[in-house]
Length: 133
Image 1 (cartoon, rainbow, N blue to C red):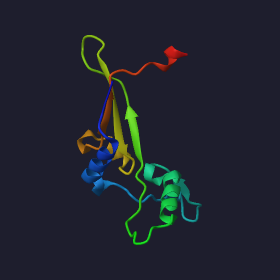
Image 2 (tube, rainbow, N blue to C red):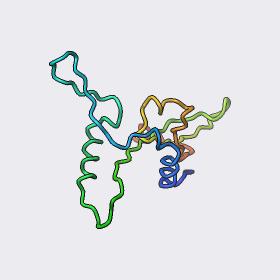
Image 3 (tube, one colour):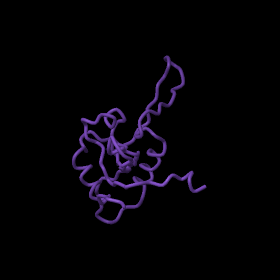
Image 4 (cartoon, rainbow, N blue to C red):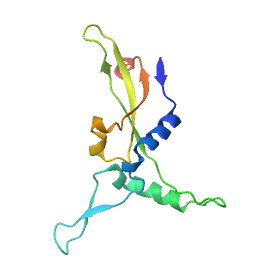
């Protein structure tokens, strides 16, 4: 059995709640060890990834419909899941699925007090793939 929230509604509410601290425009980050040295590219956040830069460039360069002057941006998100044991006695467990927006800093996503984790589904059990081999 799967209990879920509609993905589009989750995306809308997540954007509404936390857009102030979100990066919508990716950028390159670099560092020079000393003056005159060649800059070294730094990858530390999802919004500095080459894939996001390329997707952003592609969507900015795509043709627009007549009268379309809305801002365009890429909205990457990440899914996570893990097993959660529900009771001290017995073997009741659940697999929650979470959604995080990649536009938030990894340091903010890691803080539960920021409430950037969105629960999107719960699965009663997930079969072990190795049992089927």
